[in-house]
Every structure is written in structure tokens, then in C-alpha cells.
Image (cartoon, rainbow, N blue to C red; front, side, top):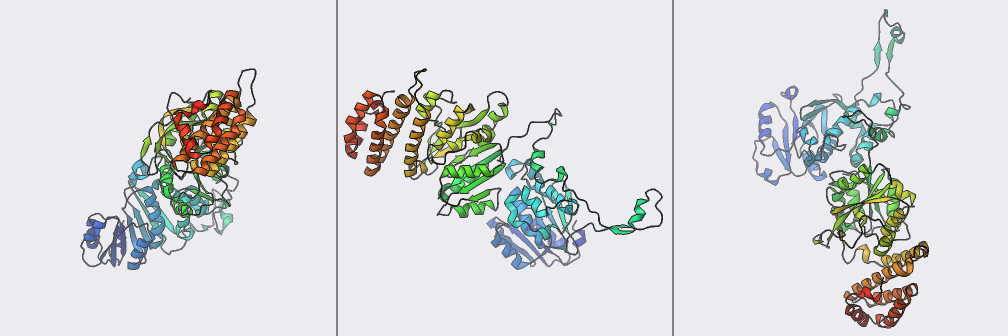
Length: 585
């Protein structure tokens, strides 16, 4: 393929040179090279020594600064060879950034495409984001004049690869003359005149048309045009639906529509751990079909981080008009998504790589009977530095998993970490989504409503994610305390006494649980010498007293004056050792 350039004064760029042997070969093969440039990310390549006419640039070729360094040596190239990282993201980014530099009549060569089928290099036979999938899409771009629809090449590329939308150049992509595949290689050539490549008009001339007389009527030039706007198989909006209804290659039967997943992340001033959380989504063995991040009025660098990553990865980024809380942010993202399963992740948590792959399995098996509302797993507790505090946080005999009994649900709470769940969109929408009055206990409230709405749940007993809890996390905020008060009032209104069954929900279950919660938070505030918070929690306990049994009302009224004195109240609760025994269930 290089023979046509052998005796011409060419410029060549090779991405990925290792020991530099190929550059030496090219310097001998081409008789009149103007410049040969090698680019490699390995700093050791600075040590390579070559004769004049060969330059080495060290750095990531996809970085703008390195591209500027390369173009400072040569503004264009007759041949560009990508023999770099072979990671799909790098292969695609490099092509979009460097193919515009290819001269008219030049070629762009991508080597080692077999890595596009290997997971380690962001590949897989059916992985829609692999480099080979991108190159197959270029074949459609080559034939754009025949689509017969209103959409452009850029529309097609952005529909399948939105993460690269800022790099698409319609006029340059129209200059692709041919795309040729060899085993593990792709050679893309550019039009000789530098303009759009078109098949051109249809020319029919002649005097005789004995087989098909209609040809003679053309008599000259006629463009080959078709209107395919009503063709459902050419519809951009139908392409996902068509992909989800393929036939099983083994049985020939039509498969049920594939389960699709939307990952949802609300963000508010989370720059410290945000990259870790986002990367844990992007590194899943089963990638989500959509990844939606909502910035809920951040004032730190969170927005810049998401904007940067959304240019490289398939992230849908929404900026909320004002800080409305994580419930509102989640509802906003879920409303924009299209998938039938919702995977939640908080800005400071992390998923293990098999998180989605494992959580989707119960949905794949649960096709009959009671509809499955959500699947969830155990999770590991990590500290501020990402170090393990506890493994298998909820897989304990005292906690009921999966949820089967309302009394247990109300007494214990859901004890389900949102970042450890996969939720059925239909179930979530049927119960009205997240209560936007809650920024704390909103997950407890949602799962309880789905449970009551006759949706089943499935539990995976091993950890698939990490929950990061620390001083400044949302669980310790003023908003959390307000949510706790609101949620208590909501439960009181939802669960009047059931005298037939003998269940006195508020008196025997809900109010005692919230007294315990307040006592726990009281002791935590005491560790930080937060006297104002301790007094506030004492008054919260006072407000709960009328809902309790008589003997418990008496105990807490006697204890209340002491609780208003932070040091004395702390000693009282510690002295009980098990302060929950102030209340008997």
C-alpha cells in the first residue's frame, strides 16, 4: 500500500514507535522523504537517536498539546500510521484528530485491530463502542449520499458515539474515498482533490434499448436519488428498538427485548471523589446503555470534571437550574433516560466491575409471576481514603434480606444502599419516583412504596459496590435531619393502627425506631462536641414521646431534662450501654 508513495517527497507520522525500528525502515524504503515523525507516550523514546529527517515527539498523541507539537513540525501528512495503544477510545480519538491532517490522496492506516475484540482494550465481538464498530460506521458514512434521509454523517456518528461529538468534522468525513480492511488492519484513503467524495451523476447514452426501453428515456445525466424518510429500517429513532429484538442464533426464535440500563448520578460539590465514581461506571463488565449525570448547582470543580469526561465518554450531562437535592436530581435524570432499568450511584461511592452484570441477572430470570421491582446487593463500607472499614455490611442474621415482611421493613428501615441497587423503571414510575421533599431517607421511602405496591425484590449476598461514609457526606447534613422529621410524619400518616391484626405501627415500631435513630445521632454529635445539634436532637426525641407506649413516655420524659445538658445527656446514654433499651419493642 506504500508503493504509490515510494518515490515521492512524503511526510509520514507513526503513532507508537517502541524501539524505533519501523522509522529506520521507512527512511530506507522511501527514496525522497521530507519528514518522518514518530510519536510515543513512553519517555524512554527520547533516548532514541536517528539520522536527520526523523523526529520523535514524546507524549499522548490524543492530547491537544502533543498534536500542536506534531503540527509544528509538519502541518499535513501523506501517510499516518496508528500503531499506538490499540485501546478503542484512543484509536477513535486519534483518527478523528489526525485524519484531517492527511493530504488529498493520502492514507490513514490503523494496525492491530484484533485488540478491538478483546475486553482489555475496550473491545468485544458485540461491543458497540469498540474501534471496529466505529470503523464499520465509517462504511455507512462513505455511502451517505444514498441514505435518502435528512440526517447527516455527523448525526449518525453522534447517535452512536456521542462522546466524540466535538471531534466530528462533516466536511472531512465526506473526503473518505475508500475503506479497506485486511486482517487486523484498516486503510482509509482520502479523495484526491480534497473535496467530498461522491459517486456522481448517472450517465446513460445510446441509440438502442432492446432489453429495457426505459433506459433510453433517461438520455443524459440523472442523479441517483431516493427518498427513504418513511423507511422504518432507515429511521434513526427506530435503530435501538430494532437492535433489541434480534433472533437467537441457536434456536432461531425471537428473543425478548434486551434489558437496557441507565446509570444515574446526582452531583453536588463532589469533585474530590467524582472521577473515581465515574470511572467505576465506565469500567463495568456490562456497560450501561446510558450514563446520565446531573449537576445540582455545584460551586466547586465538579462541573468541569464532568464536562471534560463527557467529551471522551458517552455521558449525558444535565445542569440543574438550582440546588434541589438528590431526589429531584435523580428524578430529572430518570425522566431523560430511556432504559427499562435504573442503576443509581452516588458521587462518592464506587461500583465493583461486575456490579451491573450481577444485578441484572435476577431481572433476566424473573420473567414470570410477581413483577420484580428491584435487585440489590450487599456492599463494603469504606472510609474517606477509600480504605475498607467493613465487608458485607448488611449480610447479617438480624437484617431481613430480601424484604418479605412489612413489620421488619418498618422496624429496620430498608437498609439498602442506593448505589447497590438496580431498579425497574416501570415500578419506580408506578409509585411516583423519588419524593423530592426528602434528601435523606428518600431511598427508604421509595423501596417501601414499591414493596407495598406489590413489587418483588431480589438480594445478592456478596458485595458489588463500596459505600463511602465520612464526616462531610450527605448523611451527616442538616438536610438529612429535616428529611428524617418529614419522613417520620409521612410514615405516621401512611400507617394507622391495624387493630384486626394487632399491629400498632406508630406506637410499637415507627416511633421507637426514630427515637433510636435520634439517640444514635445524639451520641455522634457528642463526639464532635456539637452541643447545639445535641439539644436539637433532644427536642426531636421530645416530639416523638407522645407516640410511644405509656411506660416509655414516662422514661423519656424523666430523661429529657438531662438530654438538654449535652455532657450529662451523653453520659446517660453511654451509661445505659444499650441505649435502645430506653424503649422496648
